[in-house]
Image 1 (cartoon, rainbow, N blue to C red):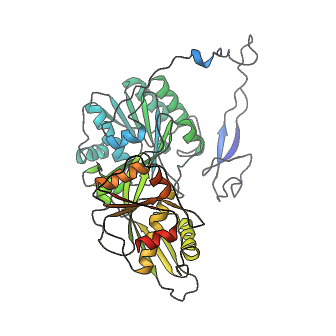
Image 2: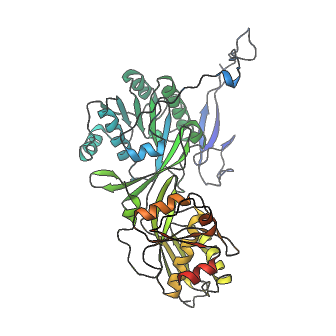
Image 3: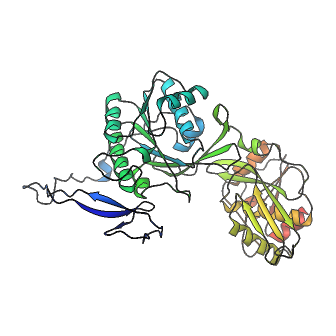
Length: 457
């Protein structure tokens, strides 16, 4: 046995330093370095194999047997959509989100639905007592005889429970509360999270069972703990939502068994999370008719078409020197770019005005296809002229004022038609490639922003 050593690890980013530093050299955080004990063991190489344990023989990739992944649907359609069809035995899923967003509620509800389908489910909580979980389960109707609860934070005890119960699905809420007794650092530290996650992932692969872990997030919105935590697991899901809005979005940022382009939409109610089957209709329910500054965007979230309302309010210069730019649900840099294009290429003296842009419903848009709808909303408010009733818009706007084609135009148009829209403004490039044209829906192809403003206003 060697001599135990210590080093210092940053609680924020996991940077390792040989001595204590007031400021982390990796992320720049102050007072984030924590001492960690390292247990150094002597060499354990085989005498017959000085390079270590015997390696596995390599084989041609064409000789490796292919097996389809057996998935277990959770009974929650929106969660299954994000996972790619359900949980895969032996897979590990990390679910992150702000405090109180509904992570525990979602996983408890999914665990109960799996249990009702005949699967044994183990729910381990290190943050709440068994009575607290039972009260929530009663409120959201998530009680089942095949759903087992345990309030435990010791890693060895959790591993023993997983081995003893032989559950098909295991939920650990949360990974930051689990601690390994042989490490001297506090629960939630970098070393504890890394070691606990590694041993839990190994147990899930050996059992095999589907492992769902809840992860805390930092004030910047990223998962707390070392970055390697996201590399250990098979899928990373983020549960998002704006304060004051009942709607929640489950988004995959990593998925080894499915696409990362899918989202799940939920509504938080007094009885728990409710799946939203028709999000487009929900987001447009309270939209004011014939009001300037309002445009309906035919967006895409993964493979799901979504109609959302983009609102803009443009006010004459207030004389404060620097005009205000407030954006909710969109990138403010993108809005600044569109304002410059409207000023230069469309001839609107809008750059000196105060501009406020909002995506109704708390949705956050990141795709460039929202450019044309955003520009039309700001121009509509500036000119105080509403768009024609029953009009949906999509398209990317370039710096030269051109309107560029975007992907999945057919799906966007079909969603608008399904909700009763009569007119769609889209890039001319998409219109020229359309194979099927609906006679009840007017399609207006545009080439540049100036032409679009003339045809609309």
